Length: 101
Image (cartoon, rainbow, N blue to C red; front, side):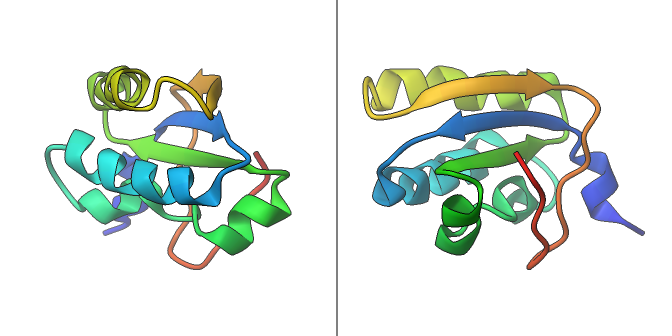
């Protein structure tokens, strides 16, 4: 079974603060309430962040989980980041893989 294919609702965020991105990984795990929660932040490590011009994508199994992530991020991190886009037809990158934002 390819669990990554279930994670097809994405949120692309941008921040010049890699520590903020690290905190957002935990927020993504808390927002994805079911399944393999760590997939939500696959491909958001520092090397991916640097390679993609300080942008990363978070993935969720449903739009409601993604929206929960965005709402919580807006509440907890009032500055230092921006939401670039959301999509409902992308598949999360397997661990260690990279993709363009």
